[in-house]
Each structure stands twice: as C-alpha cells, then as structure tokens.
Amino acid sequence: MVERLMIERVGHRGDGVADSALGPVYVPYTLPGDVVDAECVPGHPDRRHLLRIETPSPGRIAPFCPHFGICGGCAIQHWQEAPYRAWKRDLVVIALEHAGFAADVDDLIDAHGEGRRRAVFHARRGGKDIVEVGFAALRAHTIVPIDRCPVLAPGMDGAIDVAWKIAEILKPQAKPLDIQVTATGGGLDIDVRGSGPLDASSMAALARLAANGRIARITRHGELVTQVAPPAIAMGRGQVVLPPGSFLQATALGEETLARLVSGHIGKEKTIADLFCGVGPFALRLAERARVTASDNDANAIDALRRAATTAPGLKPVEAVVRDLFRRPFVPQELNQFDAVIFDPPRQGAEKQAQELSKSKVPLVIAVSCNPSTFARDARHLADGGYRLETVTPVDQFKHTAHVEIVARFTK
Image (cartoon, rainbow, N blue to C red):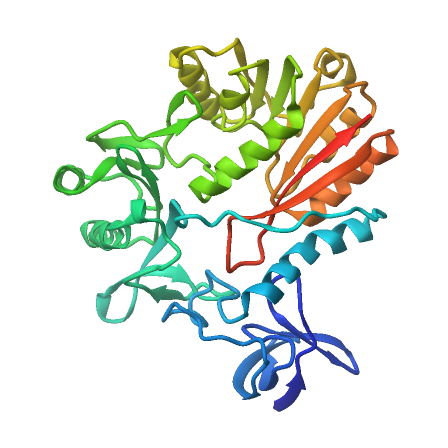
C-alpha cells in the first residue's frame, strides 16, 4: 500500500521521520519538509521504502555521489550544511537530556579532512558467476558494486581497483570476502577475511599484485601473505606499524582533532591512564610530557604501541598493558594513583569501567566516545559518583552518516 507522508524530522539513524496515528515511521533518504510517497517494509511496521518525493524539502540539495540512495554507506548527502550540523550536534544533546543532563554542548567540529583512510569492501559472487565488489545496501546483505567513493582520502586511491583484483584472484574459493583496506605511510594495508586457507597459486598472485601496486602488505585473517613495506602511521613522535586489520580512527583529521581535544583537557597532569588505548593515538602524544599507563584487551595493538613508544625519541615512560577492561576494569585503588584518566571504549561503551571510576578519587576524567547513547549512560555513572560534566564537544569524522564522536571533560 502506498502512503503519502510529511517528514517532520530526522531520526538518530539518519532516516526521515513522519508521525502517524500508530507512532513514528521511518523513511530513509528523506528530510524535514519532504512530502513523499512510500510503502511498507514487510515485517517492519514502522519502516517505509521511499517511492518518490512529491514535494522536496527546502533544505534538500543534490548528493555528490552517484551511488547515494543505493549504497548504505552514507545516510545524508542531500541536506544543506547548517541543518545537517545542527542535527548531528542534537544527537549528543538529546542523548544527554535522556540521561538527565542539561549540558552545554559545543558546536560540532568538522573532522572529515581529506576523507576516510580506511574502508571494508565486500566481495560476493553474483549472477552468471560474476564477482561484485562494493558496499552493502542499506540494512540489507545485497552488495552495491562501486567503482568510486568520493568520501575516501587520496591515500586510498586505487583501493577499490585493488579490492576488485583481489576478488578476482580469490574467485575460485567461491566464498564471500570482506577486504579491509587502510591507507598507511608505506601504502595500502589489506586484510582479507572469509577466504579460507589459500593455495600456493593464490598466494603467488596476491604477492605479484602487491609488488606491482602501491600496496604495503596483504594479510589473510591477520596472517601474513606478503609485505612490501611496513604499514606505518605517524602518531605524535611515534611510528606505529599497524597490526593486521587493526582499528584506526576513520580520518587522519579525526584522530588529530580527538587527540588535540584530549591533550587540551589534560593540561599539566603528570601521570595519566589511557584506557581502551588501541594503538596509542592519545598515549604516544601525551607521553611527550607525562608518564602514561595504556591498557587495551587487544594484545597486537598493545605490542604495536609498545614498540612505537620504545623507538620514538624524547618520550616519558609508557607502560602498555594487555587487559580486558570489560571483565576486569581498573578499580579505585589502581585509579587513584593517576592525575587523569582517559577512556575511549568501543560503541558499547564502558559501563563497568565508568562505575569503578565513579568510586575513585581521580581528579580529572576525559571520556571519548563514538556513541551518544552509551556515552550518556556512562556519564550518568560518573555524575552519580560525584563528577561534574564540564565540557562536551561533538566531532564529525564520519561525515554524511549518523555517527558522531564525543570528547568530554569531568572533574571530581
């Protein structure tokens, strides 16, 4: 059944929202002020497929990517900058309000910079045994084949072509592939997932591909296939050789912006704990002026951080510790030795660690998050333990999506 809907607002996932007698309904790729025709999504009574736009929103602009609206990577390329920025800032404001905060949230910082320096391409066999490489369609397993992606950084030039070539090389495996590509100082760092063990012929073909292209390394499920150059990233004075398939902030400017905000909040504190530290984007910069204890459950990331800290000139001591902070968070007796604590967990947040921090006497806590909802939950634990939320800054490194980063300062 076709419905005509008036879009009232944009929801937290980037879909337009229309109010109906049965509650809100969500229509992807629509904007406030759009009048649209849409039809129900089977099995999802609150979702609609967009059929056509009868009356466009005054804020609607032309998207810059030919795949927009088909590829599920970007949610919003069709909105003017000012309302888009206000909406993204409001994602943080609303999450904090739901947790009982009336915080003064800073203006959104645009940290897209040159674009994304990492991406995961999906390769699947389509009809007539043809390989398709691209991104997933919105909330679907269908692959949208792509030949370009304008949100990628210049360092990712050639990444899509390389992903197609890898898919062709591994076509006889007849398996769905996920090909993670990261731009590094030494070239593209590629980790292939899903292929199963590779025979000698496939290994040799991948090695030839690396030798003839601007590829630093190819791994399969983290196991080395071939390496032409170290896949290194500069972080402060350190050079971090990335573990295969490791996490890295999506944009170089995003990492620099988050680190600048964290460093500015830290000030002159001399002993710092960096929890959920990853490969060390905060620890390596802060070690230029303070002693740092850095912890993460990823042993490969900790090893990479430890090597970078050892070889970087002029750093104060960095103690890098492997620890599962979800199961074994730092407790107050450990936390109280630090002048400041930073925690930057994955999307699920760090509830147990926040609860332990709330019971500590650490004078300064810096929270970094990529999820407003779990950030607000963890902030509530800190506030209930006597911490005051002083500043909240949203950072937009995942531009054109519903994702937003947050840096916040808490004092006891």
